[in-house]
Image 1 (cartoon, rainbow, N blue to C red):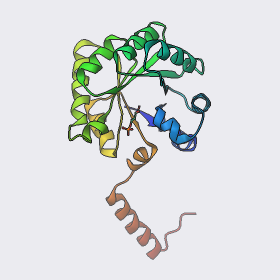
Image 2 (image 1 turned 90 degrees about the horizontal axis):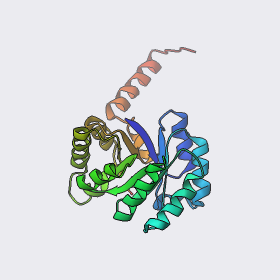
Image 3 (image 1 turned 45 degrees about the horizontal axis):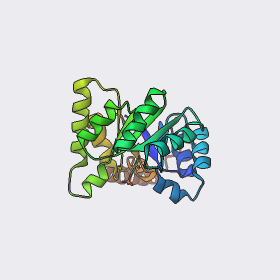
Image 4 (image 1 turned 30 degrees about the vertical axis):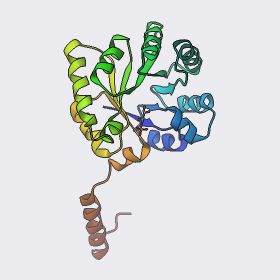
Length: 217
Ligand code: E4P
């Protein structure tokens, strides 16, 4: 499973990228707002920093507006995946961009039918939002499973990009189902390293090394 980092925070991306954990980056208007940066500038900086797809989201909601904004974003780098919402206009824009050979990430997916349409429209990535479904007492992971089944049934090559990930368990659950990619905030990716028994075991080893005066260098 590829790891995308879901942030526009350059320092956080750099830290994880240096550790080899960044196969791509996703942003959205809320993350750009949080960064306090100009969207075109920050996305260019991200493209210069990492290898792999960088999702930049359009803010227009009509087809013509999405096409104009998507083309502007795509000028930044070949790494750009133009992120469009899962609406009829977004699907039309997806088809246009994919026919032009541009990468497209169709976002705000909450049903298997939406994912089926995105694949038919030539999406490179479909972004089902796990956490926001869980927030409604639904099971976001069931959606990932349904999309995996449907895409495998028909050989669609649209990649399932598990999004709105809130916990380390979401990462392993998405991997078990076979999501192609998971995008998560930096804190969630780091939290994957945590285990209480690791902390406990390390504390014991540190104490024993001290007691026995073990020195290596
Ligand atoms: C990524 O592409 C999505 O925009 C993001 O994962 C949404 O996450 P949220 O539901 O935590 O805002």
